[in-house]
Image (tube, rainbow, N blue to C red):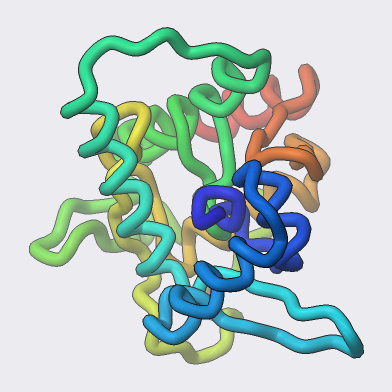
Length: 204
C-alpha cells in the first residue's frame, strides 16, 4: 500500500486494499496504524477517506528500503509488462526516478549545472540558466524549508537521483512541456518520441 502511494497521489482504503490484495477492513486497520505513526496523512472528503504519504522523506525512506530488500533477496523472476518501464522512468513521490533520473543527475553534474556539496548537491549559475531555458525559475519559487536540491537513493539503480524542490520542478516541467506523460494506473513516466529528443538536446 505504501508503494502504491509513491507517486504522490491520495488513494482511498478500498483502492489501496485492491492494490495489496486484501479486504478493505484489513487495509483500514493497517492504514490507521500507519497514520498514527505519521507515515501517512488522512484526508476526509465527504464519506471518503483518502490517504497519502506524509512527505518526501517517507518516500525516500521507502526507496532505500526497496533497495535493501532487492539486494538482500537475491535474484528474482520479475514479471509484468510495467517492470521495464518502471525501471526506466517512474515517479518517486513528486520527482523523477529510475534509469533516466540517475543518468540525468550524472549529466547535470558533468555539465556543471550541479556541484556536489557536503549535504548533497548545489545549483550553480550555469545550472540556473539551464533550468531557466526549459521554464524553471528557481528565484520565483515560494519560500520553503524543503531543500532546493537533494539526493534520493534509487532502489532499482542503487545510485542517487535528484529530489527536493528542484527535482519536483523538473518533473512538473517535463509534463508541462509535453515531453513526458504519467500513467494513472502506475508510477510509470513515459517520454514521447519528440519529448525525448528535446530532453536529450537540453541535457547534452
